[in-house]
Image (cartoon, rainbow, N blue to C red; front, side, top):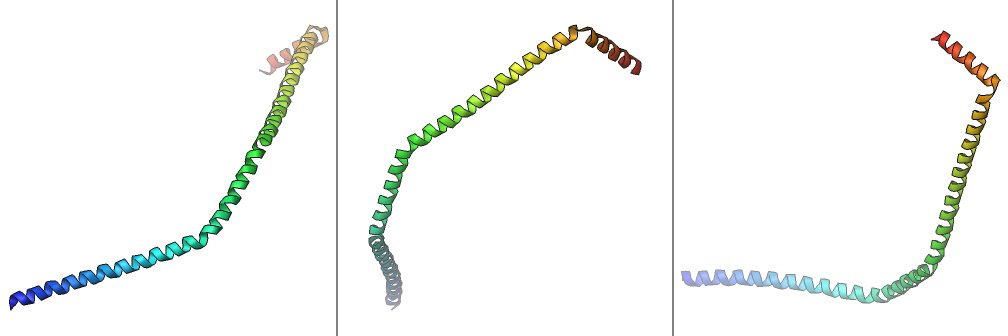
Length: 124
């Protein structure tokens, strides 16, 4: 009698486990079917989207050399402007040095310089 009760308990437990496994398999099958239907409905849309992306990338590939040329031209303009500025600064500086050297040799500037150093010595 105890043996029959134990066997019936084990049998009921196995039925519960089997029912649970079958219910999870049915839910998984429904999810797979829904996913398959979703993929089938979106497949033509995805194809259209991917062809559009491919066409855009081809157009960008054609435009890139022109963009690179424009960027190189702008870079050359900037370098030229900076070189002009640097050369003009050096020329202006060298002219100023020559003028200052010539002015130092004049008697008026020497007298003013001596006067300023005298004033400076008096102040300190």
